[in-house]
Image 1 (cartoon, helix red, strand yellow):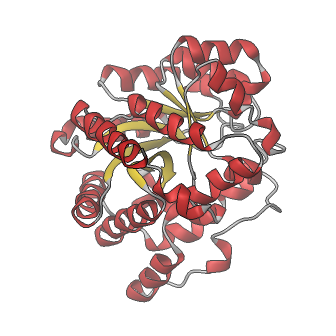
Image 2: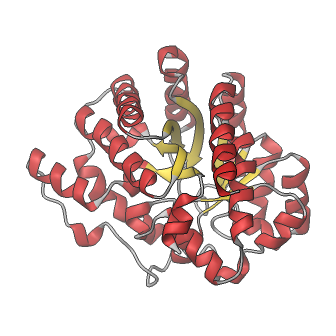
Length: 334
């Protein structure tokens, strides 16, 4: 099954840089930097009790992601993993504020990840773009400064294509961030928002109401028909991460994901990994799980990936290239 899944051209739109760097990368950086990390603390399994517990894994990982080289290498590492899943286009998100422990400036961090994206594209058959995360528990002032840095570094716009607000939404609901979202919109930034990961459908509704183009996770929308209708009306794509959602208890079981309903109602969604290493997953595993539970079929997988091209934050030329990749693949199977 995995070999056949790999052959389907895929996109990934919800993948965190720090949570997805490989164990091999972490071991190498630990040795290179002389920084001890406990690898048994960077992954979680089904025993995880909450999103807050899940997020503790990142403290260990971030110890070795505080230099320009480690950041550019991290992007290459994650892109290489995605290529092995048959991914043709990936948007990797990262929070600059988490990489300043050793004094890196925001501009240096942005440059480093863009250098990594460029190196990955030169090495592998994949398009790599980056999303900048503000953090919900940080001040609006801090998050605005990060968004401003994108405006001040226009040379990065080929690789950095949008922004996100991430973090523990139970402690910081979407409604508290309307002004910040509006500010990002005024800067002309593409926006995806983490919402509906902690059981609150209103967070999804507010994210849609504020103008988010995509919703990270969004699984709570299944609890409220009006919220799903709003998602459809505004043509917002939902970024699902099934195994991560099971671990964080965002969903009780895979049956909570009524993907066939979304397909019938033409509501856009895509399957993603969220955090490849923390969750101990890859995109092939995610799709295989959904196939086994009959939540998607093979045709559905090709269909949702093709449809998702319309929702990526890259430019028209990249969308055209991706569409051609899908057409070539379809032609070869005839």
